[in-house]
Image (cartoon, rainbow, N blue to C red; front, side, top):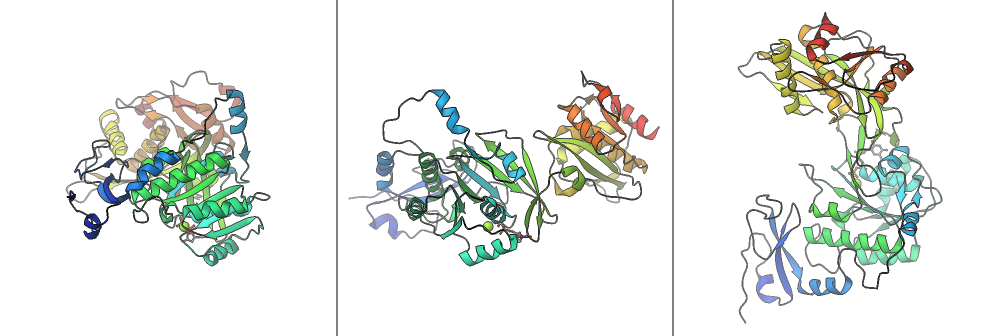
Length: 476
Ligand code: TYD
Ligand code: MG
């Protein structure tokens, strides 16, 4: 019998292709998880180049999938349920005793949910999950680790300093064994550290490969749904911010949380990327201390640097992340450029947007940035997407340009458009009341923010419609 030999572009031994009758290889896109019998340069689904990697798939796997039902479908007959009953089930949530985690999960851990926590190595994913496991008093948690030994986990638990008899450790990487142990222990919550170390007997591909990761996640999803036990998965992300393994993982799980932060700072942000049980615009803020992660309940306090003198190039923005308002400091430095092309550098803020704001200042307010180096920084190592920060960025830029400080009692909350118009932003009253609460004396907002009950605030509200007005108000 003749076998077609696929083009070999991985370092798998050729013997595997020729001699084993049961083994079949397929090519998987590392980006979206699409599969193809042949190697292709450009993925027809996600249009990424050079993402196909060859993997061995057991021929029996497809049959097994048919038999078991793939990705969460069960073989038993499923009866329709009245929607009222379904909703009641969904409302069962476990309180994590961690305000930040509760918030990003949409109010607690939903029974039977599969939650993926992604983040760069060393950011604190294991710490976050172990801390959760330890502080869930009266809830039995099974912490499965394939990365570290139980002694290492114990050391970390000692560092966190919470004692909990209902927290169990299991060093195992085989999914079937995990399910077996879980059946005996009957935990209320399972944590898997990490999905990349798991393997299932149903797929022959190497550890951490696309099909292994995908199949293991699908098994866990089925398990979570059938047993109603919530499962947390830790997943590593690659340098470009993707959860290693296919993007398809994100489709399988119910909730995707991203743990991020700048290593040079102690602050960590837990961001909701996807949530079937809550809002996706929520964030949780933590501080990494010597004894674990501390939830930061009042972010404004840490994101505003304490300073004695008024310095130029600093302006405070009234931000929203999800439903939560907080104030954050933007810092700019504008200096004469000594090289041909002036530098533009921004940390925590979109570089293209910075260029746009500079162009608007040039065209509409007569500033000359063409011969200046411009640096922009958002305090606390945070990354900001809220367009309401625009006005504060402009204030910081012009303040540094003129070398005149903006009073530390002034806040800003508005978006800026291409023609220099100051645009309205959402939930402006929440932003104003946060600034009011923190003792700010003045806040600049857009004139187009309608229906504002000015009387309920002590803070002076300055409504402007163009950037020229901002410059006039600040620097006369
Ligand atoms: P870790 O949770 O192992 O990160 P990940 O699982 O994402 O790879 O923790 C990473 C860092 O956190 C590590 O460098 C040590 C530090 N750390 C603290 O600063 N305080 C603590 O209490 C703990 C447990 C860790
Ligand atoms: Mg870890």
